[in-house]
Image (cartoon, rainbow, N blue to C red):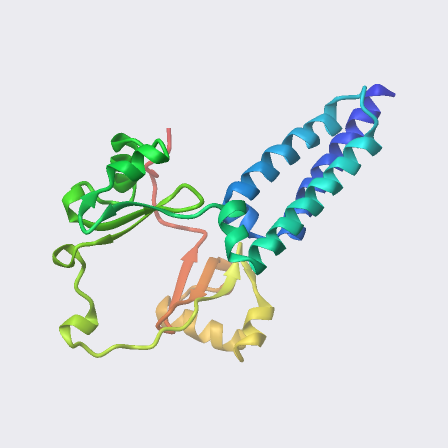
Length: 236
């Protein structure tokens, strides 16, 4: 009976952990603010106890999970309504580089080292700190930066080139299955897809396609089950 109880408790814990982020919103996963960090740690601890700690009554732990979820949801609403409370609940960005100058006092205040700053910039593709005009440590612990004008990439607008509008990519075949809903939503048909396949790849059928997408320039891209690669690079 103990094994059965642990099995049921574990399934309940996983189910609750899948449900709670849907209630709190996607920011809990993508934007780990102070509030989200505390909530995640607490929920993980409570869920672990619910799954394995047979000495605690499940009803007590479920009640704690509900209270934590409600508190986090309430704090999120308060942060949404009040700018002052938002700074305390979610935190606020810290300027680390201003006008190309490293803000040592700000870094000491948040106990952020030069090694951490250089590492964060390298992870974003910046190896020379002299290229950075502004850098901020965001609420979620990530670095945002603005390069100096001399180091920014040239755009079509800078060069005076004509600009084309782009469409959102539409996935047409996923795992070898035609996504009929996407075809209908965008006024496309299976016959149109087959015609596009024949034009780009003669002799191929839809059953040969593993993945297909209509790209940002309305172009069709196909990937087939048979790649024609005899020795893949990751093959041992």
